[in-house]
Structure formats: structure tokens, C-alpha cells
Image 1 (cartoon, rainbow, N blue to C red):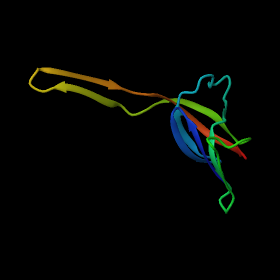
Image 2 (cartoon, rainbow, N blue to C red; image 1 turned 45 degrees about the vertical axis):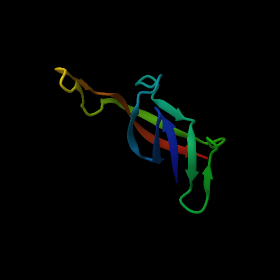
Image 3 (tube, rainbow, N blue to C red; image 1 turned 90 degrees about the horizontal axis):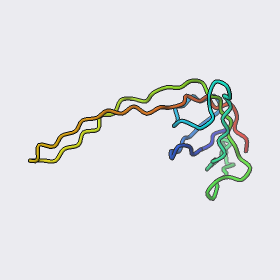
Image 4 (spheres, rainbow, N blue to C red; image 1 turned 180 degrees about the horizontal axis):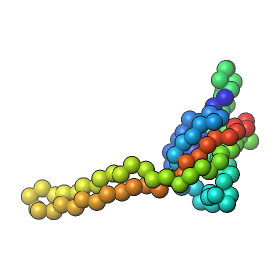
Length: 106
């Protein structure tokens, strides 16, 4: 069984036991490690039964557990304008949550 969820403006294909890095979710921490994803776009049992939402599947949810706070890879942002001696170099690392998928309810 797998599902497609939307969180942080991105879509993820998840199965039970998957570990993924997502954008930070408000309220997720070591004190409250349970995360409930209610924006489920598609649910499939792996065979012929596929439920597609419009835009979300009614009554479907995906349960996850917060594991850790991590940082994404370093990105280099470089701006310049030719012939104007304008150059700016900055770096960025996104804060992420590492989450393990515990259950898919359809």
C-alpha cells in the first residue's frame, strides 16, 4: 500500500516504514513526535484499487513519527549583472524534519 501526500508545497510517494526529510512542520518535536498528514492526494493498495482525490481523498490520512531535526544540503545563490561589477554570493541550508511513516489509513 502506498500514498501520495502533500506537505511543505511538495508531493511525496510514501509507504509504511519509509523515512523521508520534509519541510519543517509546526508543532513537531521530541515532546510531540506524532505527525498527521491529512493532505492525501492518492491512495493505492498496490493492486487495482486506486483512490484519487479531488483534490484530496476523503477520510484518508497518513501517520508519521518525528525522528530528528536535520539540515538540507548547502546551496549557493550567486547573483551578478554583467559589465556592472555587481556580484553577490550567498549560501543557504534548509531546516528539515526527518519523519518515519507509521500507518496509512484509507
